[in-house]
Image (cartoon, rainbow, N blue to C red):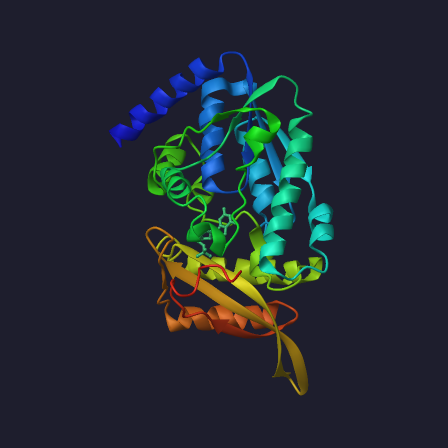
Length: 319
Ligand code: XMP
């Protein structure tokens, strides 16, 4: 812990030196990395920090609200929230190819972020939550197979395009160190221990075409999966747990009538590095509760399946 104690102080000093009296923009995603960067910068330069949250309508249940609450109430940063749900849903309409979905989401994100960033006068720096594994991966496989399996869209192209200078205070840290740092900086445990969430969000867990209605179904099912795993005390013992909405209808029976509705897949994995992963061996009673609750409480779902594939050959996300 003493190592991180020094780390926070040294990094704060370094940021102050680099930034001087300029303004820094930091993108918030709902994830732990960007939250820790923002908290660190807030400590370092306070009112010179502006945060941008692009609410793409693809976040988990209550996620945007939690981040907004934290960063407007607790940290009191200059927070810009871009409400872009309609924009994202429009560009996703009619698109079911996974790579095309990712491409469109990435482009729309950059457009939204850029438009907001350009409204912030005198901004000179852009802060990003790049971690040590990201540094290794991007250096090792720029055009390699890792990049061609799935297009990853974080804010990679932004600094160059906007003419900002880049600040990456977490470049030397691993994820568990970032979490410790977040706790040290006073971030709440709900944000610090949140499972990683992909940039394209629920869009890659809503297989096929993404619609507002499907997202609403997925969000409720996902909240049940996460809530039940938390209630069982197993959330931190799993690396990522979530729901996936499949474009598959099947026949069921509810009361006296036939149903023909959607399928939800539950995905939970354990992994150290997210390059390989095993499915979580969750207790059957827990899976049973998750299934019963989803079918009873989420309208439009009559079947729940558990994904027992490991990575490789499957990936963690379904798209
Ligand atoms: P896969 O599905 O490739 O995912 O086994 C490995 C890890 O990466 C996350 N992931 C992403 N993260 N942007 C991100 O920031 C993305 O486009 C993206 N795609 C997948 C995934 O959630 C898992 O943790």
